Amino acid sequence: MSALPWWRDRRRLGWLIQLAVGLVVLLAIALLLGNLERNLTRAGLRLSFTWLNDPAGFDIAETLLPYTAQSSYAMGLLAGFVNTLRVVVVGLVLATVLGVASGAASLSRNPLLAGVMRTYVEVVRNVPLLLQLVFWYFAVFLALPSAAEALRLPGLTLAKSGVFLGPVSLVNGELSGGWRLSLELAALLTGLVVYSGAFIAEVVRGGIISVPRGQWEAAASLGLRPFTILREVVLPQALRVIVPGLNSQYISLAKNSSLAVAIGYPDLYAVAETTLNQTGRGIEVFLILLLVYLGLDLGISLLMNRVAHLVRIRER
Image (cartoon, rainbow, N blue to C red; front, side, top):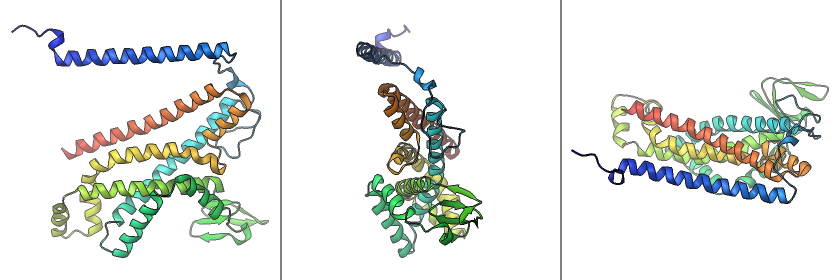
């Protein structure tokens, strides 16, 4: 039997078409970048990143890195990225916990609990995140009492000087001890977690509903309690439906973290905005932002795709 010619071999033809499309896209990108470079050079704004080594000359309110005003712009942007990464990682964990709990509770047989959860989801999902961040920061956290009259909860202390986790003591009118979160960070995390948790709750609810009712009934016939059935029987089967939806919500949370600039938290976008105002390097700054956020979102997507693959393997 003679071999098929390449133009009739669907598999080979498919690869050739993809290769041709890829080359056209790369050529278009090269032409656009070349045109951009020529226009910038003609305007005396040739692309350059040497300014990253210049002293930044501005302070960052809070950072996990050793940064001062004499540090370089590159160090300032790195400090802003670390702040963004801290918000994204903590926000993903807390939003997942809240979303899973809310999604499961919305299907509870207790009408009061289910009604409260449904109300939370519907209200939060239909109010813009920016308004929620402004509300949490100005109406809630900035209205906290002074250190002497701080609100004390088990393991949590709330005051104008910050949110403290762990045991704290009042020394000379100031709170000390524990792990302190600034009001800006606390408001940003609260807003992102509450907002993203509502969307995750709907994803989880849809995943639980996708599991046949017979699975609940079979597990109940074995004498298992509802919470055990949910944890051991239903959620493992619902993961194949939940994980793709979580991927989208996690990426949205990472992108929404850039709204931190509205309440004064020094994340990557806020630091980049200050850098742009001082250097005038708009193209370079936006290229850095584009690449960083693209890399962050692709990293989340790759991780969640891996999780989805593992879930599929377990079900076979």
